[in-house]
Image (cartoon, rainbow, N blue to C red; front, side, top):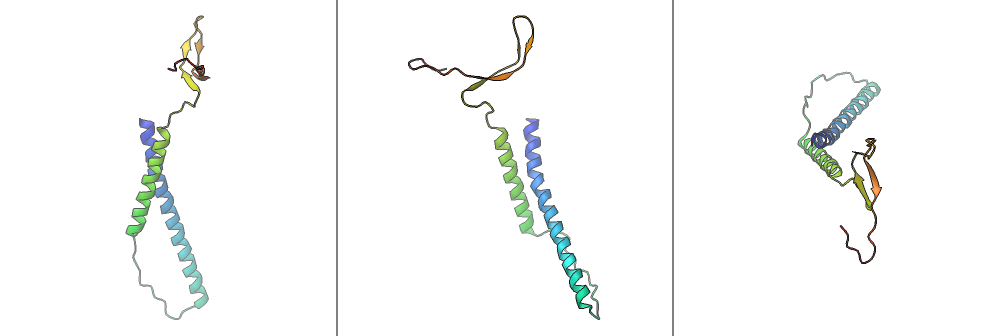
Length: 119
């Protein structure tokens, strides 16, 4: 249960952090372009009026939450899949007749013959 919650949390916050990283890289790229334009233009009057935009837009927040939620849901669904393949069954670890530990493993399940009921 703890593993499922941890995986869901990682897949929820991971895409958000990735989107924040991409947003910051985009902002750095725009700053680089603006600095490059300023170097080429060499204006006589420099406007130093700050433009404060400290928080992301609502669309960015909504997309980040949606991407994180979908990723967490897919990760949770992946952890809920049955791990035993078709035609196999899991034999848990046990002690054999001599007292030696036999580790758990997947073994081929015998296929029922025609006319025999299956379990």
